[in-house]
Length: 206
Ligand SMILES: N[C@@H](CCC(=O)N[C@@H](CS)C(=O)NCC(=O)O)C(=O)O
Image 1 (spheres, helix red, strand yellow):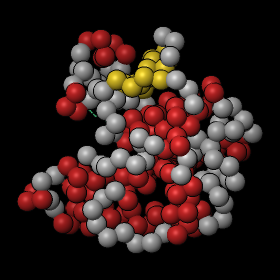
Image 2 (image 1 turned 180 degrees about the vertical axis):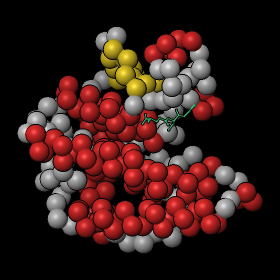
Image 3 (image 1 turned 120 degrees about the horizontal axis):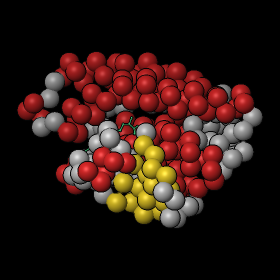
């Protein structure tokens, strides 16, 4: 059985849990990271020297890096569907996964840290405003793309949608005004309606 180490309060852990639930593969999730510790134990570090979650172990194969884990699980269990096999379709999906991790996540992280993990009296309004401005530009791009296709990499759900759905769960969970992005909202609702989204996209941020 697949073992997933990581606290569910981590967006990167949620990606892996969402992937496993979409793939309907049996798994156990063990809390680790943050207040749960464990990540600095020798046993954990031997499997992930970065001392971070998520970490998965699949039949003795230990793997870290959330988007890589999503790719691995989809390639193993849903080749030709969640993991597109035609080359341009696959890299269309890959592109959105990297965009989530290197562009969108970087833009929105500070607003999340400030609004969820920083006490109100220590929050920086300029830092929040900067993060929101950076993210707003990316949301416009995302909304335009999702006005042209049902899912990020075409008309079918693929691995590309998994990290971005978790990202939008985090963004829309921030206690602030949110501008409407109708195409992103339509796409997101189509994913949150799936039974696989339970326990992942319906939990409060912490
Ligand atoms: N690039 C890594 C980043 C992993 C990461 O930043 N994990 C955070 C939680 S989101 C972590 O482990 N922080 C330390 C901790 O929780 O103890 C990935 O996508 O898996």
